[in-house]
Structures are given as structure tokens and as C-alpha cells.
Length: 332
Ligand code: ATP
Ligand code: MG
Ligand code: FE
Image (cartoon, rainbow, N blue to C red; front, side):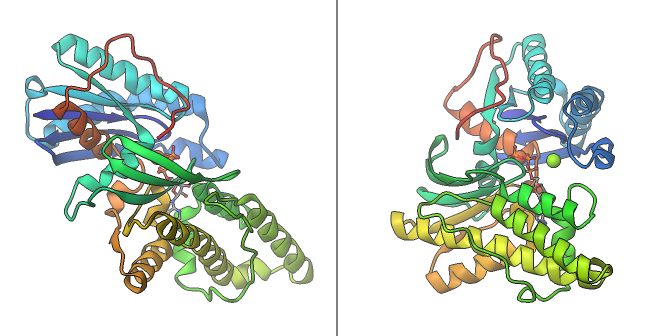
């Protein structure tokens, strides 16, 4: 079967073609317009999706070397995300399905981040634990089957990606700052600055205290030395990154101990982080886990993960009607 996947939940317009479970194309149109505002502006995101959606889908079809008429079903991100952004992808998918008289498949974006692990080999066996870390979410999910997932823990305040992006803002780095912190961290000393680890007993997370600690640290140091940031950027980034990564990995370890599950995966934009990737690899070797780390292009938002999730639903005839509407909030 040939599935067209559509993603438009935030600031990436993406389209992908999946043929019998194999991704043949994955076109991602980013939106540079938000950089100067220091964050995603919802109205501008919707407008950019409207401009990008048709050319992005055309490109995905061309790159897969298929004809439009050969598409068997359309899968789209129903939520969670920005409502106005989701509306563009949802409306496009509905019209495409209606015009071609093919089935329509709704996909949960957070489930799709996890199901990106079924694009390439090796694929995780069920059950596995997934730490989903992105711009809007930080979750530990017990994945029992493709669409049977249990939330074991989540953030009580900021998401891990937000912790990276807000720290970057304090350091005067442009949005989104996560990848930049990663870059500078690789040149710095992670033990230079001591940052607190939040004391949360269960499998939940909290990152807002860390953000405040970083703000106070920088303010204190800059008062003493106005050039502090320029002189210590790499070490600050390395220290912050190490703290975020240890918070994440300590909870994942705890979840593995509590559940007895030894297949461990990471997903979402922050799973592109070099410190998290190497940290999980090392921890997995010590613990005897099977570790699953996505390819870079499937960490941040993409339609390949929507298409692969759609393919799994296609196999069990899990379709929706034309009355479907997007949802800003959705549980895994
Ligand atoms: P959600 O999936 O929760 O709806 P989103 O779709 O906006 O949110 P993603 O696209 O999955 O999130 O991830 C974007 C986030 O990933 C941003 O916060 C960005 O800073 C972060 N990120 C991307 N690459 C890295 C990296 N190398 N290191 C740290 N953070 C990163
Ligand atoms: Mg994005
Ligand atoms: Fe995402």
C-alpha cells in the first residue's frame, strides 16, 4: 500500500510517501519566519503551512517516483499541536482523500514520534519504554503495541526542549537554541558549573527550577565580570546539557527498574542531542539494555513518522470520516 503522510503540528510543513512500510521520501519545509520573534508565532505558522503544503506534498510524491493516483490512503497529524497549524494539514488531507475517494487516517503526533522507530532496522520489540523529549513534551511511555501506550511520567512544567530553548535565550542565542547548546557543549567542560537536580519522587519531571538556577548563575557572574558569557559559553552549555541529560536518564533508569522492561528508546527533537544519545548508549551498555536511538532526520518533526504510523493503521483498517477535526491536546 502507498500512504501519503502529512505533518503540520508546529512550524514544520512535511510530507512523506511510505510504500509497504518503507519510507520513499520525507520532505520538510521549515519556517525561518519565527527566528526573529524568539519562538513560534501561531498565526505566522498557519500562513506558512498554507503556502508550503502543496509544493511540499508535490515534492514528496516526485521524490518517491510515484503518481498521485497510486496513493492508497492519506495519514495526517490530528494533534497535539497548534490548532491553526493542525487545521492546514487536516484540511489538506481531508480534501485529498475526498477528491481521490481514498481512506483518511488520523495520527497522534506524540505516538508518531515513538513510532518513528519502526521506519528502519533494528526495530524495538514490544514492550519497550520510550523517553519522548521534544519542544512541548517530556514523557516516559510504556509502549505495549503500536497504538497501546501507557504514560508513566511527564513534565510538571517545562518540556526538556523548552529547557534547552529557554536556557539558550538566557545565553542570548537565537531560537531554537537546543541545537546550538549541543554544539557549544561539545567544546566545554560539563563539570564547570554545578546545577541542581530536582527532587521529584515519581517518574515525573520538572525543569523550571533548573531554568531559574541558570538565570541566577548568569546574572551573578555577569555582575562580577561583564564578559562572563563570552568567556564561558562552552562550559555553561556543557554544564546545562549534562544536567538535563542526567535528569532524563536517571528517570529512564528508574522506569526500567520499576517495570523490568529492558528495551529502551528515545524520541522527539531532543533525542537529536549528542549528550543524550551518547549518555543513553553508555548507560544501556552498563545496564544490559537494548537501546534504540532514531536517525537524526526522524527526531524533530517530520512526516515520515506520520506515514509509518498511518501504514500501521492502514493494515488494520483504522480509518476516520470527513467529520474529523484537529485537537490541540491529545494523550498518547
Ligand atoms: P512536540 O513534539 O512536543 O509537539 P515540537 O514538535 O515542537 O514539540 P520537536 O520538533 O519534536 O518538537 O523538537 C523540537 C525541540 O527539539 C526544540 O526544543 C529544539 O531545541 C530541540 N532540539 C533539537 N535538536 C536538539 C539538540 N541537538 N539538542 C537539544 N535540543 C534539541
Ligand atoms: Mg519545530
Ligand atoms: Fe514534535
